[in-house]
Image (cartoon, rainbow, N blue to C red; front, side, top):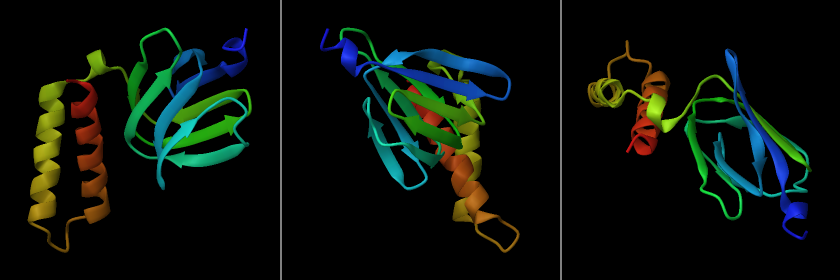
Length: 136
């Protein structure tokens, strides 16, 4: 019974689907200001998502792992909702495409010119690295 009191609802929603709906006793994800871990009864909070790995923990089960690439998180005492621009399961990631995107971004950053949007290249590099991290 004590473990049931730790469980809260988790939803990850993208523009084209309800990516995940389930329960967990902890969720970890990346925000614009760093990584965060959330348990039930967290203070209400809204924050900006950054590209990163989402890890949903539930005692006695394997972690649920996905990549999320920007959006917003709403944290309530009994529910966490991630409204993500893109969310991907590890088996949905094209490793070759992610490696090519990483190389393109690294080349843009290494050969900076005024025509290069550095923030955009850094964001593309981060997305590619997250994809490669969970596609292992």
